[in-house]
Image (tube, rainbow, N blue to C red):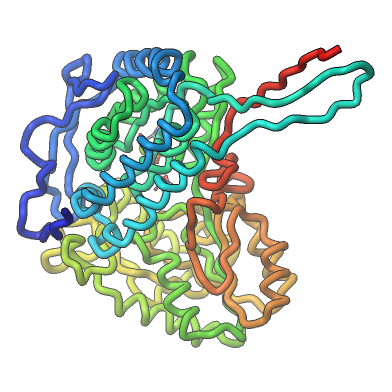
Length: 496
Ligand code: NAI
Ligand code: MG
Protein backbone atom coordinates (compact mmCIF):
# COMPACT_ATOMS: atom_id res chain seq x y z
CA UNK A 1 0.00 0.00 0.00
CA UNK A 2 1.29 3.40 -0.92
CA UNK A 3 0.51 5.93 1.73
CA UNK A 4 1.83 9.26 0.53
CA UNK A 5 3.74 10.57 3.46
CA UNK A 6 4.08 14.24 4.21
CA UNK A 7 7.83 14.34 4.69
CA UNK A 8 7.61 17.79 6.22
CA UNK A 9 5.77 16.72 9.30
CA UNK A 10 6.03 12.96 9.70
CA UNK A 11 9.01 11.10 11.02
CA UNK A 12 10.45 8.88 8.31
CA UNK A 13 9.98 5.22 9.31
CA UNK A 14 13.62 4.36 8.50
CA UNK A 15 14.92 7.05 10.85
CA UNK A 16 14.42 5.24 14.11
CA UNK A 17 17.28 6.84 16.02
CA UNK A 18 19.23 3.57 16.02
CA UNK A 19 22.60 3.30 14.31
CA UNK A 20 22.27 2.10 10.72
CA UNK A 21 24.32 -1.03 10.32
CA UNK A 22 25.95 -2.45 7.20
CA UNK A 23 24.89 -5.57 5.32
CA UNK A 24 27.50 -8.31 5.09
CA UNK A 25 26.67 -11.92 4.28
CA UNK A 26 22.99 -11.35 4.89
CA UNK A 27 23.54 -9.95 8.38
CA UNK A 28 23.25 -6.39 9.64
CA UNK A 29 26.47 -5.66 11.48
CA UNK A 30 28.42 -2.83 13.09
CA UNK A 31 31.73 -1.75 11.57
CA UNK A 32 34.64 -3.90 12.73
CA UNK A 33 36.18 -0.73 14.18
CA UNK A 34 32.91 0.18 15.92
CA UNK A 35 33.06 3.59 14.23
CA UNK A 36 30.06 5.48 12.88
CA UNK A 37 29.53 8.66 10.87
CA UNK A 38 26.65 11.08 10.60
CA UNK A 39 24.31 11.48 7.69
CA UNK A 40 22.63 14.88 7.57
CA UNK A 41 19.79 16.64 5.81
CA UNK A 42 21.52 19.26 3.63
CA UNK A 43 18.47 21.53 3.72
CA UNK A 44 18.46 21.91 7.48
CA UNK A 45 21.73 20.49 8.75
CA UNK A 46 19.79 18.05 10.95
CA UNK A 47 21.47 14.71 11.73
CA UNK A 48 19.27 12.01 10.22
CA UNK A 49 21.17 8.94 11.36
CA UNK A 50 24.45 7.57 12.59
CA UNK A 51 25.77 5.03 10.12
CA UNK A 52 28.30 2.24 10.59
CA UNK A 53 31.56 3.41 9.03
CA UNK A 54 33.13 0.62 7.04
CA UNK A 55 36.80 0.45 6.17
CA UNK A 56 39.28 -2.09 4.81
CA UNK A 57 38.41 -4.82 7.30
CA UNK A 58 34.68 -4.62 6.58
CA UNK A 59 35.36 -4.55 2.86
CA UNK A 60 37.47 -7.71 3.27
CA UNK A 61 34.63 -9.48 5.04
CA UNK A 62 32.09 -8.33 2.49
CA UNK A 63 34.25 -9.40 -0.45
CA UNK A 64 34.82 -12.81 1.16
CA UNK A 65 31.06 -13.21 1.61
CA UNK A 66 30.45 -12.14 -1.97
CA UNK A 67 33.03 -14.67 -3.19
CA UNK A 68 31.48 -17.51 -1.17
CA UNK A 69 28.02 -16.65 -2.47
CA UNK A 70 29.28 -16.40 -6.03
CA UNK A 71 30.92 -19.80 -5.94
CA UNK A 72 28.31 -21.40 -3.72
CA UNK A 73 24.54 -21.28 -3.70
CA UNK A 74 24.09 -18.34 -6.06
CA UNK A 75 25.91 -20.14 -8.88
CA UNK A 76 23.19 -22.84 -8.81
CA UNK A 77 20.39 -20.35 -9.40
CA UNK A 78 18.79 -20.69 -12.81
CA UNK A 79 18.14 -17.55 -14.87
CA UNK A 80 14.39 -17.80 -14.23
CA UNK A 81 15.02 -17.88 -10.48
CA UNK A 82 17.14 -14.75 -10.63
CA UNK A 83 14.43 -13.22 -12.77
CA UNK A 84 11.78 -14.04 -10.17
CA UNK A 85 13.88 -12.39 -7.47
CA UNK A 86 14.35 -9.26 -9.57
CA UNK A 87 10.62 -9.06 -10.23
CA UNK A 88 9.92 -9.46 -6.53
CA UNK A 89 12.40 -6.70 -5.79
CA UNK A 90 10.73 -4.48 -8.41
CA UNK A 91 7.42 -5.06 -6.67
CA UNK A 92 8.86 -4.24 -3.26
CA UNK A 93 10.46 -1.06 -4.58
CA UNK A 94 7.15 -0.07 -6.07
CA UNK A 95 5.26 -0.78 -2.85
CA UNK A 96 7.77 1.15 -0.77
CA UNK A 97 8.48 3.82 -3.32
CA UNK A 98 7.20 6.84 -1.41
CA UNK A 99 9.34 5.90 1.54
CA UNK A 100 12.42 5.42 -0.64
CA UNK A 101 11.96 8.68 -2.49
CA UNK A 102 11.37 10.58 0.75
CA UNK A 103 14.61 9.13 2.11
CA UNK A 104 16.54 10.32 -0.97
CA UNK A 105 15.03 13.77 -0.46
CA UNK A 106 15.95 13.91 3.21
CA UNK A 107 19.45 12.52 2.80
CA UNK A 108 20.69 14.37 -0.29
CA UNK A 109 18.26 17.24 -0.77
CA UNK A 110 16.67 16.57 -4.15
CA UNK A 111 13.15 18.03 -4.20
CA UNK A 112 10.42 15.54 -3.34
CA UNK A 113 8.74 16.39 -6.67
CA UNK A 114 11.86 15.05 -8.38
CA UNK A 115 12.49 11.94 -6.28
CA UNK A 116 8.82 10.93 -6.50
CA UNK A 117 8.99 11.24 -10.28
CA UNK A 118 11.63 8.47 -10.37
CA UNK A 119 9.15 5.65 -9.74
CA UNK A 120 8.98 4.47 -13.32
CA UNK A 121 12.75 4.70 -13.67
CA UNK A 122 13.51 2.74 -10.50
CA UNK A 123 10.93 0.02 -11.05
CA UNK A 124 11.50 -0.03 -14.81
CA UNK A 125 15.22 -0.67 -14.39
CA UNK A 126 14.55 -3.67 -12.18
CA UNK A 127 11.96 -5.10 -14.57
CA UNK A 128 14.34 -4.62 -17.48
CA UNK A 129 17.12 -6.48 -15.67
CA UNK A 130 14.60 -9.18 -14.76
CA UNK A 131 13.93 -9.61 -18.48
CA UNK A 132 17.64 -9.72 -19.25
CA UNK A 133 18.18 -12.53 -16.75
CA UNK A 134 16.58 -15.02 -19.13
CA UNK A 135 17.56 -13.30 -22.37
CA UNK A 136 21.36 -13.50 -22.22
CA UNK A 137 23.01 -16.24 -24.23
CA UNK A 138 26.17 -17.26 -26.03
CA UNK A 139 26.50 -18.02 -29.72
CA UNK A 140 27.49 -20.86 -31.95
CA UNK A 141 30.15 -19.77 -34.40
CA UNK A 142 31.02 -21.41 -37.68
CA UNK A 143 34.78 -21.80 -37.93
CA UNK A 144 37.06 -22.41 -40.90
CA UNK A 145 39.51 -24.87 -39.46
CA UNK A 146 40.26 -28.02 -41.40
CA UNK A 147 38.66 -31.04 -39.77
CA UNK A 148 35.51 -31.01 -37.69
CA UNK A 149 35.36 -28.59 -34.82
CA UNK A 150 32.29 -27.23 -33.19
CA UNK A 151 32.76 -23.83 -31.55
CA UNK A 152 30.51 -21.80 -29.35
CA UNK A 153 30.64 -19.15 -26.67
CA UNK A 154 29.46 -19.24 -23.10
CA UNK A 155 28.62 -16.01 -21.39
CA UNK A 156 29.67 -16.15 -17.79
CA UNK A 157 29.24 -13.75 -14.91
CA UNK A 158 32.26 -11.54 -14.22
CA UNK A 159 32.24 -12.51 -10.54
CA UNK A 160 32.49 -10.27 -7.50
CA UNK A 161 31.70 -6.66 -8.38
CA UNK A 162 32.68 -3.65 -6.31
CA UNK A 163 30.13 -0.90 -6.96
CA UNK A 164 30.96 2.64 -5.88
CA UNK A 165 28.33 5.34 -6.27
CA UNK A 166 28.05 9.09 -5.71
CA UNK A 167 25.34 10.94 -3.81
CA UNK A 168 23.36 12.60 -6.55
CA UNK A 169 20.73 9.87 -7.04
CA UNK A 170 21.19 7.27 -4.30
CA UNK A 171 18.17 5.07 -5.09
CA UNK A 172 18.46 4.81 -8.84
CA UNK A 173 22.27 4.61 -8.77
CA UNK A 174 22.06 1.66 -6.39
CA UNK A 175 19.50 -0.07 -8.57
CA UNK A 176 21.61 0.64 -11.65
CA UNK A 177 24.48 -1.31 -10.06
CA UNK A 178 22.58 -4.08 -8.24
CA UNK A 179 20.19 -4.89 -11.11
CA UNK A 180 22.75 -6.16 -13.63
CA UNK A 181 24.56 -8.05 -10.87
CA UNK A 182 21.42 -10.03 -10.06
CA UNK A 183 20.54 -10.50 -13.73
CA UNK A 184 23.90 -12.03 -14.64
CA UNK A 185 24.58 -14.09 -11.51
CA UNK A 186 27.37 -11.89 -10.14
CA UNK A 187 27.65 -10.76 -6.53
CA UNK A 188 28.33 -7.26 -5.26
CA UNK A 189 29.78 -5.12 -2.53
CA UNK A 190 28.13 -1.71 -2.84
CA UNK A 191 29.78 1.32 -1.32
CA UNK A 192 27.32 4.21 -1.12
CA UNK A 193 28.51 7.81 -0.97
CA UNK A 194 29.30 9.08 2.51
CA UNK A 195 26.97 12.06 1.89
CA UNK A 196 23.90 9.90 1.24
CA UNK A 197 24.10 6.29 2.45
CA UNK A 198 20.56 5.84 3.77
CA UNK A 199 18.49 4.88 0.73
CA UNK A 200 21.01 2.23 -0.40
CA UNK A 201 20.75 0.68 3.09
CA UNK A 202 16.94 0.70 2.99
CA UNK A 203 17.02 -0.75 -0.51
CA UNK A 204 19.28 -3.52 0.79
CA UNK A 205 16.58 -4.49 3.29
CA UNK A 206 14.19 -4.92 0.38
CA UNK A 207 16.83 -6.91 -1.52
CA UNK A 208 16.94 -9.38 1.37
CA UNK A 209 13.15 -9.44 1.60
CA UNK A 210 13.02 -10.28 -2.12
CA UNK A 211 14.86 -13.52 -1.40
CA UNK A 212 18.39 -12.69 -2.52
CA UNK A 213 20.65 -15.24 -0.77
CA UNK A 214 23.11 -13.98 1.88
CA UNK A 215 26.37 -12.60 0.49
CA UNK A 216 25.04 -11.85 -3.00
CA UNK A 217 24.42 -8.18 -2.17
CA UNK A 218 26.53 -6.54 0.53
CA UNK A 219 26.44 -2.85 1.40
CA UNK A 220 29.39 -1.23 3.15
CA UNK A 221 28.96 2.49 3.81
CA UNK A 222 32.05 4.53 4.56
CA UNK A 223 34.41 7.11 3.15
CA UNK A 224 36.00 7.07 -0.26
CA UNK A 225 39.62 7.13 0.86
CA UNK A 226 39.09 4.17 3.21
CA UNK A 227 36.19 1.86 2.26
CA UNK A 228 36.13 2.95 -1.39
CA UNK A 229 39.87 2.66 -1.87
CA UNK A 230 39.94 -0.77 -0.17
CA UNK A 231 37.26 -2.03 -2.55
CA UNK A 232 38.92 -0.54 -5.62
CA UNK A 233 42.26 -2.19 -4.87
CA UNK A 234 40.93 -5.48 -3.48
CA UNK A 235 42.61 -8.49 -5.05
CA UNK A 236 39.53 -10.65 -4.93
CA UNK A 237 37.20 -8.17 -6.65
CA UNK A 238 36.75 -9.00 -10.34
CA UNK A 239 35.28 -5.73 -11.47
CA UNK A 240 34.71 -2.22 -10.16
CA UNK A 241 31.71 -0.34 -11.49
CA UNK A 242 32.30 3.27 -10.53
CA UNK A 243 30.20 6.43 -10.84
CA UNK A 244 31.64 9.73 -9.68
CA UNK A 245 34.25 12.35 -10.48
CA UNK A 246 36.88 11.85 -13.16
CA UNK A 247 39.62 12.50 -10.58
CA UNK A 248 38.47 9.59 -8.44
CA UNK A 249 37.93 7.57 -11.63
CA UNK A 250 41.64 7.90 -12.35
CA UNK A 251 42.40 6.61 -8.85
CA UNK A 252 40.13 3.64 -9.49
CA UNK A 253 42.07 2.73 -12.62
CA UNK A 254 45.37 2.86 -10.74
CA UNK A 255 43.94 0.77 -7.93
CA UNK A 256 42.70 -1.82 -10.41
CA UNK A 257 46.19 -2.60 -11.68
CA UNK A 258 47.04 -5.04 -8.87
CA UNK A 259 44.79 -7.79 -10.18
CA UNK A 260 43.79 -6.19 -13.51
CA UNK A 261 40.19 -6.15 -12.46
CA UNK A 262 37.61 -4.97 -14.98
CA UNK A 263 36.62 -1.34 -14.59
CA UNK A 264 33.63 0.60 -15.83
CA UNK A 265 33.58 4.35 -15.24
CA UNK A 266 30.64 6.70 -15.45
CA UNK A 267 32.25 10.07 -14.77
CA UNK A 268 31.53 13.74 -15.08
CA UNK A 269 31.03 16.11 -17.93
CA UNK A 270 30.78 19.60 -19.28
CA UNK A 271 28.10 18.77 -21.77
CA UNK A 272 27.26 21.15 -24.63
CA UNK A 273 23.63 22.09 -25.15
CA UNK A 274 23.30 23.76 -28.55
CA UNK A 275 20.40 26.05 -29.38
CA UNK A 276 19.78 27.13 -32.99
CA UNK A 277 17.77 30.21 -33.89
CA UNK A 278 15.17 28.01 -35.58
CA UNK A 279 14.41 26.06 -32.37
CA UNK A 280 10.96 26.02 -30.85
CA UNK A 281 11.70 28.50 -28.09
CA UNK A 282 8.71 27.47 -26.00
CA UNK A 283 10.24 24.07 -25.39
CA UNK A 284 13.92 25.05 -25.69
CA UNK A 285 13.84 27.66 -22.91
CA UNK A 286 12.62 25.35 -20.13
CA UNK A 287 14.41 22.40 -21.76
CA UNK A 288 17.82 24.06 -21.70
CA UNK A 289 17.09 25.50 -18.26
CA UNK A 290 16.16 22.20 -16.66
CA UNK A 291 19.09 20.50 -18.42
CA UNK A 292 21.13 22.25 -15.72
CA UNK A 293 18.81 23.36 -12.92
CA UNK A 294 17.32 19.90 -12.31
CA UNK A 295 18.74 18.38 -9.13
CA UNK A 296 20.53 21.73 -8.60
CA UNK A 297 22.87 20.84 -11.43
CA UNK A 298 24.13 17.76 -9.63
CA UNK A 299 23.75 15.50 -12.64
CA UNK A 300 26.73 14.09 -14.49
CA UNK A 301 25.29 14.83 -17.95
CA UNK A 302 23.90 18.31 -17.18
CA UNK A 303 24.00 20.53 -20.29
CA UNK A 304 26.11 23.24 -18.68
CA UNK A 305 27.81 24.72 -21.76
CA UNK A 306 24.86 26.36 -23.48
CA UNK A 307 25.84 27.40 -27.00
CA UNK A 308 23.26 29.77 -28.50
CA UNK A 309 23.15 31.00 -32.09
CA UNK A 310 24.29 34.62 -32.11
CA UNK A 311 21.19 36.18 -33.58
CA UNK A 312 18.94 34.89 -30.81
CA UNK A 313 21.62 34.84 -28.09
CA UNK A 314 20.51 37.85 -26.02
CA UNK A 315 16.86 36.99 -26.21
CA UNK A 316 17.27 33.30 -25.51
CA UNK A 317 19.78 33.65 -22.70
CA UNK A 318 17.59 36.31 -21.11
CA UNK A 319 14.59 34.01 -21.26
CA UNK A 320 16.48 31.12 -19.70
CA UNK A 321 17.65 33.42 -16.89
CA UNK A 322 14.05 34.52 -16.34
CA UNK A 323 12.92 30.90 -16.36
CA UNK A 324 15.57 30.14 -13.72
CA UNK A 325 14.45 33.08 -11.61
CA UNK A 326 10.90 31.76 -11.75
CA UNK A 327 11.78 28.35 -10.34
CA UNK A 328 10.88 27.78 -6.77
CA UNK A 329 13.98 27.30 -4.63
CA UNK A 330 13.18 25.91 -1.25
CA UNK A 331 12.75 23.14 1.25
CA UNK A 332 13.03 19.88 -0.69
CA UNK A 333 10.28 18.37 1.41
CA UNK A 334 7.77 20.88 0.06
CA UNK A 335 5.98 19.38 -2.98
CA UNK A 336 6.05 22.80 -4.69
CA UNK A 337 9.83 23.10 -4.55
CA UNK A 338 11.66 22.81 -7.87
CA UNK A 339 15.25 23.48 -6.80
CA UNK A 340 16.60 22.16 -3.49
CA UNK A 341 19.92 22.61 -1.71
CA UNK A 342 23.30 21.31 -2.78
CA UNK A 343 24.28 18.11 -1.03
CA UNK A 344 26.94 19.40 1.37
CA UNK A 345 28.94 22.31 2.62
CA UNK A 346 31.86 21.07 0.55
CA UNK A 347 29.74 21.11 -2.60
CA UNK A 348 28.43 24.57 -1.69
CA UNK A 349 32.00 25.83 -1.39
CA UNK A 350 32.91 24.30 -4.68
CA UNK A 351 29.95 25.85 -6.49
CA UNK A 352 30.24 29.31 -4.90
CA UNK A 353 33.96 29.14 -5.69
CA UNK A 354 33.06 28.77 -9.37
CA UNK A 355 30.56 31.62 -9.12
CA UNK A 356 33.45 33.85 -8.00
CA UNK A 357 35.75 32.49 -10.68
CA UNK A 358 33.12 33.18 -13.33
CA UNK A 359 32.79 36.81 -12.25
CA UNK A 360 36.57 37.22 -12.07
CA UNK A 361 36.89 35.78 -15.57
CA UNK A 362 34.51 38.47 -16.82
CA UNK A 363 31.32 36.47 -17.20
CA UNK A 364 28.11 38.30 -16.32
CA UNK A 365 25.49 36.65 -14.09
CA UNK A 366 21.99 37.33 -15.46
CA UNK A 367 20.30 35.40 -12.69
CA UNK A 368 21.37 33.85 -9.40
CA UNK A 369 25.11 34.12 -8.96
CA UNK A 370 25.21 33.92 -5.19
CA UNK A 371 24.32 31.62 -2.37
CA UNK A 372 20.99 32.29 -0.63
CA UNK A 373 21.88 34.08 2.60
CA UNK A 374 18.52 35.46 3.69
CA UNK A 375 15.53 33.84 5.36
CA UNK A 376 15.01 30.22 6.35
CA UNK A 377 17.11 28.87 3.45
CA UNK A 378 20.25 30.55 4.76
CA UNK A 379 21.00 27.51 6.97
CA UNK A 380 20.97 25.13 4.02
CA UNK A 381 23.30 24.91 1.06
CA UNK A 382 21.13 26.80 -1.43
CA UNK A 383 22.35 28.28 -4.70
CA UNK A 384 19.64 29.70 -7.00
CA UNK A 385 19.57 28.93 -10.75
CA UNK A 386 22.40 30.91 -12.28
CA UNK A 387 22.99 31.93 -15.89
CA UNK A 388 26.33 33.42 -16.85
CA UNK A 389 26.38 35.40 -20.10
CA UNK A 390 29.49 36.56 -22.00
CA UNK A 391 31.25 33.27 -21.43
CA UNK A 392 34.21 32.37 -23.62
CA UNK A 393 35.29 28.82 -24.46
CA UNK A 394 38.54 29.05 -22.55
CA UNK A 395 37.09 30.23 -19.24
CA UNK A 396 37.24 27.78 -16.38
CA UNK A 397 33.46 27.99 -16.00
CA UNK A 398 33.23 26.76 -19.61
CA UNK A 399 35.66 23.88 -19.14
CA UNK A 400 35.40 22.51 -15.59
CA UNK A 401 32.57 20.56 -14.04
CA UNK A 402 30.85 22.77 -11.47
CA UNK A 403 28.10 20.34 -10.43
CA UNK A 404 25.76 23.14 -9.43
CA UNK A 405 22.83 25.02 -11.05
CA UNK A 406 25.11 27.11 -13.25
CA UNK A 407 24.76 27.66 -17.00
CA UNK A 408 27.63 29.09 -19.03
CA UNK A 409 26.04 30.72 -22.09
CA UNK A 410 28.26 31.05 -25.17
CA UNK A 411 27.32 32.51 -28.58
CA UNK A 412 28.07 30.84 -31.94
CA UNK A 413 27.36 31.62 -35.56
CA UNK A 414 27.99 28.58 -37.70
CA UNK A 415 27.23 24.88 -37.54
CA UNK A 416 30.74 23.55 -38.25
CA UNK A 417 32.18 26.06 -35.84
CA UNK A 418 29.83 25.02 -33.06
CA UNK A 419 30.54 21.31 -33.57
CA UNK A 420 34.27 21.95 -33.24
CA UNK A 421 33.82 24.18 -30.21
CA UNK A 422 31.36 21.84 -28.53
CA UNK A 423 33.96 19.09 -28.84
CA UNK A 424 36.75 21.21 -27.40
CA UNK A 425 36.45 19.72 -23.93
CA UNK A 426 38.11 16.88 -22.09
CA UNK A 427 34.68 15.34 -21.46
CA UNK A 428 32.07 13.63 -23.61
CA UNK A 429 29.04 12.48 -21.67
CA UNK A 430 25.82 14.23 -22.73
CA UNK A 431 24.85 16.83 -25.31
CA UNK A 432 21.73 18.59 -26.52
CA UNK A 433 20.58 20.08 -29.80
CA UNK A 434 17.56 22.34 -30.19
CA UNK A 435 16.45 22.86 -33.80
CA UNK A 436 13.50 22.29 -36.13
CA UNK A 437 15.85 21.42 -38.97
CA UNK A 438 16.21 17.65 -39.26
CA UNK A 439 19.44 17.76 -41.25
CA UNK A 440 21.12 19.99 -38.67
CA UNK A 441 19.97 17.59 -35.99
CA UNK A 442 21.54 14.62 -37.77
CA UNK A 443 24.76 16.46 -38.48
CA UNK A 444 25.18 17.32 -34.84
CA UNK A 445 24.17 13.86 -33.68
CA UNK A 446 27.08 12.49 -35.72
CA UNK A 447 29.49 15.36 -35.10
CA UNK A 448 29.36 15.57 -31.32
CA UNK A 449 31.78 13.32 -29.49
CA UNK A 450 29.67 12.26 -26.53
CA UNK A 451 27.88 9.16 -25.31
CA UNK A 452 24.39 10.66 -25.62
CA UNK A 453 22.89 13.27 -27.93
CA UNK A 454 19.44 14.56 -27.07
CA UNK A 455 17.57 16.40 -29.81
CA UNK A 456 14.75 18.72 -28.72
CA UNK A 457 14.83 17.11 -25.31
CA UNK A 458 17.39 16.61 -22.58
CA UNK A 459 18.29 13.80 -20.19
CA UNK A 460 15.92 11.20 -21.61
CA UNK A 461 16.94 7.85 -20.11
CA UNK A 462 15.68 4.32 -20.53
CA UNK A 463 16.84 0.97 -19.17
CA UNK A 464 17.21 -0.39 -22.71
CA UNK A 465 19.26 2.51 -24.08
CA UNK A 466 23.00 2.53 -23.29
CA UNK A 467 24.38 5.48 -21.33
CA UNK A 468 28.02 6.38 -20.83
CA UNK A 469 30.97 8.48 -21.81
CA UNK A 470 33.50 9.37 -24.45
CA UNK A 471 36.91 10.71 -23.49
CA UNK A 472 37.30 11.63 -19.82
CA UNK A 473 33.67 10.97 -19.09
CA UNK A 474 34.64 7.34 -18.74
CA UNK A 475 34.13 4.01 -20.43
CA UNK A 476 31.72 1.13 -20.28
CA UNK A 477 27.99 1.60 -20.61
CA UNK A 478 25.13 1.43 -18.16
CA UNK A 479 21.70 0.29 -19.28
CA UNK A 480 21.18 -1.65 -22.47
CA UNK A 481 22.66 -4.99 -23.39
CA UNK A 482 26.06 -3.28 -23.23
CA UNK A 483 25.87 -3.18 -19.44
CA UNK A 484 25.57 -6.94 -19.05
CA UNK A 485 29.29 -7.28 -19.44
CA UNK A 486 30.26 -10.82 -18.89
CA UNK A 487 33.20 -13.00 -19.50
CA UNK A 488 32.94 -14.61 -22.90
CA UNK A 489 34.39 -18.08 -22.97
CA UNK A 490 35.15 -19.88 -26.22
CA UNK A 491 34.49 -23.61 -26.24
CA UNK A 492 35.95 -25.95 -28.88
CA UNK A 493 34.81 -29.49 -29.46
CA UNK A 494 36.48 -31.80 -31.92
CA UNK A 495 33.62 -33.74 -33.39
CA UNK A 496 35.54 -36.02 -35.74
P1 NAI B 1 33.92 11.35 -5.76
O1 NAI B 1 34.13 10.86 -7.13
O2 NAI B 1 35.13 11.58 -4.93
O3 NAI B 1 32.95 10.35 -4.98
C1 NAI B 1 32.14 9.38 -5.61
C2 NAI B 1 32.25 8.07 -4.85
O4 NAI B 1 33.60 7.62 -4.88
C3 NAI B 1 31.87 8.17 -3.38
O5 NAI B 1 31.23 6.97 -2.99
C4 NAI B 1 33.22 8.27 -2.70
O6 NAI B 1 33.20 7.82 -1.37
C5 NAI B 1 34.06 7.37 -3.56
N1 NAI B 1 35.50 7.61 -3.51
C6 NAI B 1 36.14 8.79 -3.28
N2 NAI B 1 37.47 8.62 -3.31
C7 NAI B 1 37.69 7.31 -3.58
C8 NAI B 1 38.86 6.53 -3.75
N3 NAI B 1 40.08 7.04 -3.66
N4 NAI B 1 38.72 5.21 -4.04
C9 NAI B 1 37.50 4.69 -4.17
N5 NAI B 1 36.36 5.37 -4.00
C10 NAI B 1 36.45 6.67 -3.70
O7 NAI B 1 33.08 12.69 -5.85
P2 NAI B 1 32.75 13.73 -4.68
O8 NAI B 1 33.97 13.97 -3.85
O9 NAI B 1 31.53 13.26 -4.01
O10 NAI B 1 32.41 15.05 -5.52
C11 NAI B 1 33.42 15.91 -6.01
C12 NAI B 1 33.06 16.41 -7.38
O11 NAI B 1 33.04 15.34 -8.29
C13 NAI B 1 31.70 17.03 -7.51
O12 NAI B 1 31.70 18.36 -7.17
C14 NAI B 1 31.38 16.82 -8.96
O13 NAI B 1 31.96 17.81 -9.76
C15 NAI B 1 32.05 15.52 -9.27
N6 NAI B 1 31.08 14.40 -9.21
C16 NAI B 1 30.57 13.98 -10.37
C17 NAI B 1 29.64 12.98 -10.37
C18 NAI B 1 29.06 12.52 -11.64
O14 NAI B 1 28.12 11.74 -11.64
N7 NAI B 1 29.58 12.97 -12.73
C19 NAI B 1 29.12 12.37 -9.15
C20 NAI B 1 29.76 12.88 -7.97
C21 NAI B 1 30.69 13.86 -8.03
MG1 MG C 1 35.14 12.72 -2.60
